[in-house]
Image (cartoon, rainbow, N blue to C red; front, side, top):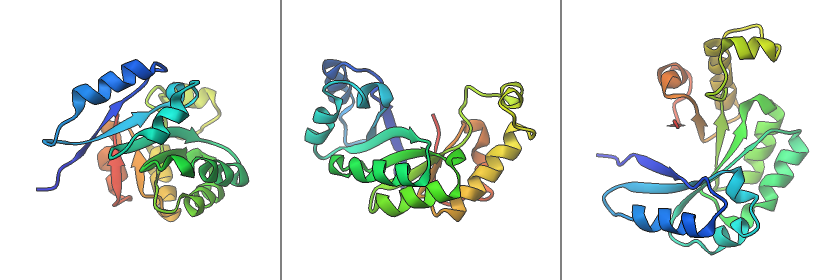
Length: 172
C-alpha cells in the first residue's frame, strides 16, 4: 500500500518551535514532510535553517503570484534550498505557471486553487462572475495544461479536481 504524505505545518518564525515540531513528529511509520509558510520563509533565520535541513521532505509554501519572468526568477533564486515542493497560485495564469515549471526542474510545482478563506460572496466582491466550484474546476484544468505536479485545494474540492487533474492533490 502506498503511504500518503502528511505535511506538518511549520507556521512560526521561531527556529526553536520549528525544531521542536520536527523532533516530535519524526517517525518511520508515516511519510512526513514539513511545510514552511511565508511567516517562516521570511523570518531572519528561516532561509538559513532550511538550507541546513537534511533528509526531510520540504515544502516551500511561497504561493507565488506574479508575472512569468518574476515567477521564473523566484523559483531559480530558491533552488539552492532544494525544496521538494513549492507553490504557485494558479490564478497567476498559464504563462506564469509554465515559466515557474520550467525553472522548477526536479522540484514539484504545486498549483494553489482558490484559498479556503474565500467563498462565492467574497469572490464576487473580487470581480469573479462564476461560483467557486466552476473557478476551481477551470484552475485544475489550467494546472493540468501547465503540467504542474500537483494541486492544493480544499478537501471539499478533491473529487471535482480529481475529475480533470490526475496527479498529486494536497489538502489543508
